[in-house]
Each structure stands twice: as structure tokens, then as C-alpha cells.
Length: 339
Image (tube, rainbow, N blue to C red; front, top):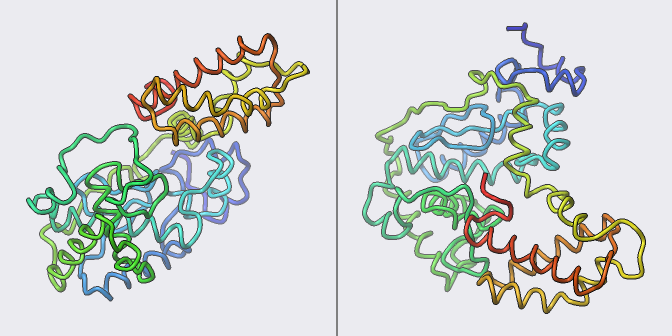
């Protein structure tokens, strides 16, 4: 194995040199970085609530709390500016890259860690309120954007993913000092969950958990995958989040050759009909179809696409494409085909 570069040396490496490194070769740690202050803030919030357990934090390949292990993994890229820059270039964003965002994610993962450390998920009342902990985790999930049965904390209504995520999100809202959850969630079914979390946290005040140590899965110190292959896999797994996801298919429907009618004009003129028809025949909510239309329209504008043939033919192709996407999402939770 090559000698590890110093932390300072990472900034001097080219992008290709960084991509050639294995995760286990990265000379990173939480101590001495801005993440250390975030973890200290988290522990202080737990202290204020008289919760004695402080989940150990380590650098992993992504945000995670391994199943039933009371430890918190923080993405390695947050431990160095050069790696945050690379993450942004590769993934278009840096998840947890600001102090407020990082704290939201830390509180969420701590909810998982406390659930595992004190084994709340085994309780009948926990299962009655949040659901079966043993429920399958899908690769994706379909959310109800207007549901008041769940708190709203992370993006994409993440509390609706799984009972364990519901608990973690509810805990994160509860512990945030500025959340004012009683007022904000008055009249919501989610308020019952928040009150139950408070009941549990009062119960464990001053009590050490039955399980305080956990296995640190996906610790970068044990991962030999190169950054290049790490991002190759990550970009494939998150393909739908990239702006160019629809580009290949849209270019098959439309053309870049200038014509009288633009693709955007066609979509605007028929948007209401397309949304109504696709929603009716697939059973997908208009909200999701409309959101999909917005994305496709935006890409057509960016690509400067035109209608290449008779309007009815292009309209039929768009309708079939939208229907296919909606059906994929309806049955798998993602617009593309299952991997």
C-alpha cells in the first residue's frame, strides 16, 4: 500500500491523483476539523436533555448508522476541503456540507443510534406508533407530500421511508432546540409521535444503554475501493438526481435541428392534458406527474430541442414516455428501470 499523504498534501493533489487513491489511504480524522465542533454541539444537546449516551462517530463512505449498531458514520469527504470540492463536482452537491445541514443529519443518525442502544424498536408501543421495525427497506420509496402523520425534517419526506427512519426523523425534530415542535405540529398526527419520543427520552435520563458499543461498518479505514470506483458506483446509484437523466430519451423524441415549434412550446400547450391523462391511466398522483413535466420541460429548454415531425406524432411519443416513467415510479419508486 502506498504511503499515506498528509492531510495538507491532499490539497496539492490533482483531481486524477485524488481519484486514484483508495479510501483507506486517505489521511483523515474527525479531530481537528470543523466536524469536531459539530459532534461537540450534538453531545451538548444530548447533555442538555440529560441523555448519557453519546454515539461514537467515525468516517464512513456516506451518512449512516449501521443496522442495530449504536454508532454514527459521517461521510469522509466532509473532513477535507479538497474532498468536498471533488464531491461537489462528482455529485453536484455536498450532503451535509454546511454547519446547519450537518447538524440536521447528525441528529437524524443519532435518533437511529439511540433507538439501537436502548432497543426501543423492540417495544410494542414503539411498533404501534411507528410500525414494524422488521419491515423491508426498499431501494426507494413513494411519499405522500401532504401527509400530517410524519414530521418534516430532511428533504423528500424521508420520515415516510421506513418506521426506523420515521423514529429518527421524529427524534431529530424533538431534540432541535429551535424546532418549537408542539406549536408547529399542533393538530398533526405526528404530534403523538413527538410526545412519545419525549416520553422515551425522559425515561432514559441518566440511564446508560444496554448496548453502548457497535461495529463500524463501511469505515473508510477498511475500504480499499478507489475514489474513482467509489464515485462511479455512487453516480450510477443516483443517476436520477442528475440533470441529464432524461437527455438521451428526449433527444430520441425531439431534435436539435431548428424548426418552427420548440419542444417547450409543445409541452406547455399540452401540459394540462398530459398530466391529466397520465395521472388517470397510471393511477399516479397529479402532483408527481406535474413535477416530472417540470423537469422534462426544463431539460428541453436547456437542450434547445424542437419538434421534428407532425405535432400529434411527437405528442404521442411524449405521452408514452411520461406514462412509462410514471409506471416505473408507481411500481418501483424510481423513474428508471430497476437495477
